[in-house]
Length: 165
Image (tube, rainbow, N blue to C red; front, top):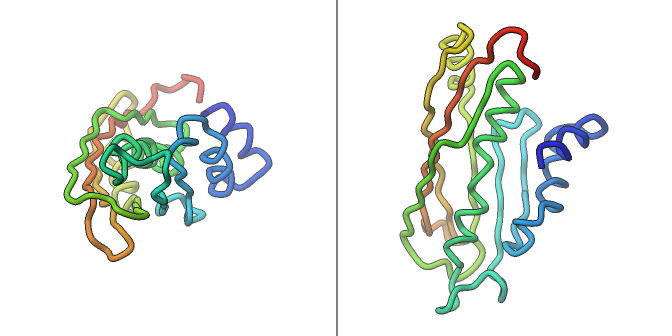
């Protein structure tokens, strides 16, 4: 996915390329998820997943694996886009807490605060410095009810000088 995204961003703005990458990436074909909004600065993104026959569980509600999979990479991708190639960003852990059955479409909005990016750039100014970052999002139904809450922990480290981007 990274190689395709890097290649695509040479010809298309990164926020637009992200929509194409998400549509073409095989692990998401079975979720029916779509990026409905992505801000050009990659600080905000909204994803919607309708309830389909192929992403339902045995009791006819949203399959938990699909709910988590639509949340999995986005904080990492967004933070990588905001920090640039001088930083390494990895998913360290993630948890999902199911609050209610998803009986219809669900929407997740991801936000990276501007202050966080500035803080990380300032705090991680020394090569090799590192930090864990915890970010949260909610998956909501069309009535605004929380279906699930997701917490992602990201590992962020400043690259050593001379390392390839």
